Length: 258
Ligand SMILES: O=C(O)CCC(=O)C(=O)O
Image (tube, rainbow, N blue to C red; front, side, top):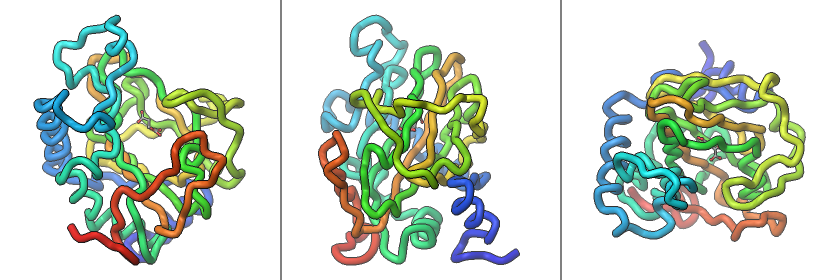
């Protein structure tokens, strides 16, 4: 099988044409366990952690729901690579950096790290959006890894993508904060539902339309999301969010060590 710097020709072609591909068993179960343990370590220290690191589910924040453990009320961990040594080191994972160098390299920066926690029973949907509508990086040499840290199913909120939608530019978005999304969202019937096992990785273009439904089960659905971009990308003034700057410069001018 021919390869393009660590990717098969088929994976590269699927990324270019469809805007995504999946690699099974991308992280080992030991690596996934390491991620789960570090989440627990952060939450053991909560609320004595940087404010932007932990975002609570809105219904928990409003006091409408009280989870058994505080970790089960978290919507996301945000910019972990900025605030936590474990997640910063993970940004240098050779498999992720190798793919980043192929897709947006030669030099790469980690632009955003998140852990989407989608708690059992009340983890809400993430509405249809394109990630680069948030970042507004120009040029749009940006893509994400979405790595399942639990088995992700239709019922607990697996990722849904619209194949090929990364080729039509950024659609109109409205709303605020986590509810910033496409004003004319596609129909879920037209989406590819990406059911994945823990450790599998979805690699997706920064302008693909995507969405996750609510978690209606008692099972957890944690996912690690790292976005890499070429270091020369800059947030344009079209973004309603403060300009995005790299969390970690992996390679090129100003590169930081492990
Ligand atoms: O994992 C999720 O539930 C949503 C992830 C996502 O699309 C995002 O946060 O941009």
